Image 1 (cartoon, rainbow, N blue to C red):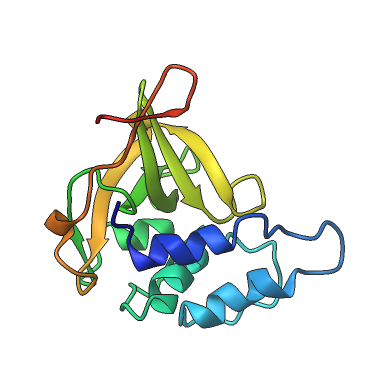
Image 2: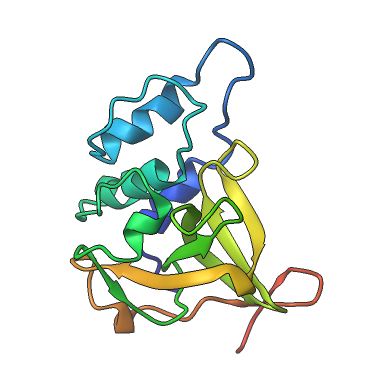
Length: 166
């Protein structure tokens, strides 16, 4: 199965987490620089899901939106609308208001849930389920190759496992 390069990179980061207390994980701080996000951040408490998504895309030598906001992916000229594909950028709403949200990469779909690989999910990089009712946008990096060349995100079973369609 063809996998977008940014999703492959993101998978190598699974397990990176914030450090509780006064110390900060330098890898989390690095995401802001790798993602070329124009914001000076020196801690791992500043919401970093967008920085992680930008870092993954930029690490794949693709132009990201370079935004510090999850919602910045939804209306960026550096992303285009796409279908529910493996590695698609998913923008979710938040109860914190219309300017807030979450962003990650789609790795599974079904049963009213979207499985996202993202940063700052429980203060770490991991895959986690989110309600599909929170979906704001499905996007693809504008210069990340033709999204129609990539496979649909795997369906998940009632127990959350990916289901093969072949």
